[in-house]
Length: 448
Image (tube, rainbow, N blue to C red; front, side):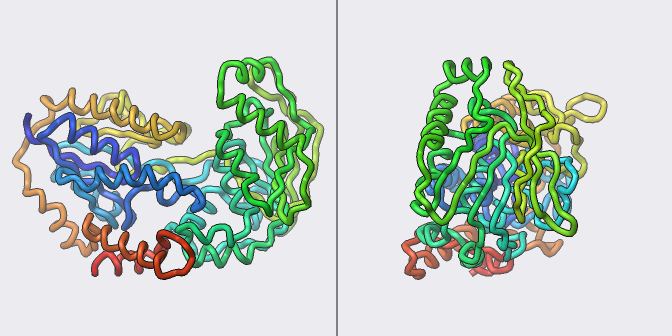
């Protein structure tokens, strides 16, 4: 097979799976995975709550891929600043964009911009130890509203309600633990627009809400409705049935009087964040299920006093320089992974995979099949990709060094990874590792 040199922009699961599939299906391929952060793994590292240790199994699999000789990790390199599309075309035969979705989707209701109103993605980045977010987070609200009906909403609610000391066995960064220890939240209200059979919670995430002895989970009976579409979903989907069964169990369980409470409100749509100078409450409207899986908003309003609001209504991808972008859908236009230009014609040697391709939906299995589709398209195009005289594989690193970019290689990440494990061993916390947060500290430990 002809030699094929490919750049993958983004070191999350989507990018790593694409590199793995390409190098296995095309033995002549080498891949550089270019990542803006000094650490790999994307939202697996920076988008998952620290008390979800099962995610470590995914990281182990991704680690094995990045350890392969045909794949090279180049961290701390910002596409659009340190390398532009023209640069990538000079060093590589093809480029695959796999930058995911890290921003919060907006929620257009009055008052959403008041102080005390936050995007869930920003909060997740903080408690997951993202190096580019502030080291502190305002946690002075005693009553909090979380808007959303997916697993991110549950993660946010759980992290706000769960006592910080229960995180001491995790990799939680020291500054995050200190912030959560000072958290004043006692009541966390989660609002879902539709009924129990339509919400997008996974059964495991929902059950985890009650794992802390210091947290009561209270399902409010108002809005606990199952329409014809809901009955069909329960009958036809095991996951939906488990979610509804868990909600029913919470509904029928008497609160224990725990210090912290998570309230689940169904068939309630947010219509206004109340407040003058900062958040003072959330107004929701009762919704009526229409029998087809949709819900209609009514004029039956409820005001819930809260001092903070978190919107968890979805992630949104960011427009990449020199790459077409559908701002309404939040994705790169493509045909089976081939990036389409403004004229609708595929851009030569330019591909996309992951959430920036299909939107922020699906689990790891979807990410693998999505990457496979993109690689199939790339390999089908190989004969038509021109092969000009390529510079040496080291040329891109030399180019970055000349621009003053401190590249974190795989060896550098291994040093940082070992340092985090040593912090965990020395902490006395029973934690396997403790995450290093500031970018400058990450770079320092990656260059030792």
